[in-house]
Length: 166
Image (tube, rainbow, N blue to C red; front, side, top):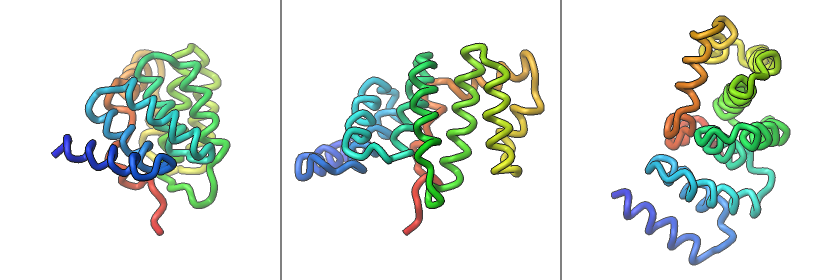
């Protein structure tokens, strides 16, 4: 079944090499398969085709974070936040706030991490993940962040709640 999914993405891209969503979705499929580098290549192409696609910046940033490339991840996640619109699904925006703060935490910019999480919590006060980060310290916080950034865990490949509903 997974092989068929990749054949479908490949065929869609062959038919229309400017099909941004096919590149982005194939990248997410590569993440779920554990092929982070190939995923990043597809996110690169999706971003090249549509530099306003917050989901692609978020997915690439999370993929980079899973490889401990935190500075690049922070840049992508910052870009994702900068292009959020009122139509951006809240679940995606929350994910970006959490991941961006996590990236800052992993680069020992703890005050900046808390600032990002707090900004996100102001906009999304019911989000348990952001609350948990803000309420935790020391080792407990490090465990939360490390778990969130582990490969395969970071990018929601189901897209549930991450795409606008037309």
